[in-house]
Length: 329
Image 1 (cartoon, helix red, strand yellow):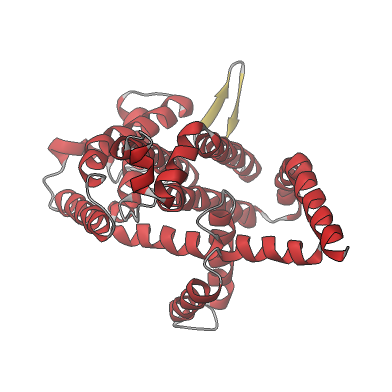
Image 2: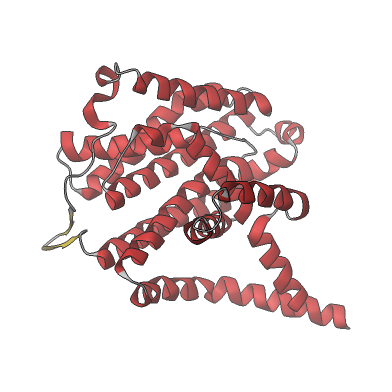
């Protein structure tokens, strides 16, 4: 009787969450900045952007089964594409965001074609090599004939967001927050549609048992390739949003260590969920912001935390929260 009541309560909670949860999240996003100082609004907007970047890794690893350290490369190409659209083509913000997405996906097509032909740790090695090669080429000083002067170029001032007959200034922290939250929500929606589509279901089947997926007629290499490219597009999109918010781009964004940050954030939050990477990113950035003042070797504490999570809660904070509500139900 208790078990039946518990299952009913949890199912009711889950149903209500997915029915009304998006309303609660949207309400929180709207009301939160009204309680924050200007600098805190920008800080939360940064969490949204880096959370979207971490989500791009979760798509590749949590749903595609590919441990990629190349996400930072596509984040960097997103920054580059945004700069090309802004300074070379003189596009508005909307056109530059499209340029960033296209730049990341175009570069991901050949990289993913070769990387997805190998398996397991070989895939990891290939993505690390790609990241190192890209950084070495761009850092050599001979990259201008490849990428032009747009790798490290930044916006000189806060841009205007055109909306037909009127525009809003990004110099207003509240405008920057709401625009970032809206654009990140769009990226999350696209990711959700991707993984809930037949394509996403096929990828999960492939991750669970690649041999069985091949036997039922799924094209393993093509599915992995397409997920790699789609995740790269989201990483590039997040890079453009960061270049817009921070008005800063740098060669360091291409480095594989930024991919490592995405791995940490995703593992802490939960790699097989949409919201897990955002929870992990928020947890890391908030605790780093405050605890690093008191602990000089703060990153060591996070290394220990990573080991604990991998051992006792491999599904991350999101998984812990899910089990908590199941028990409470």
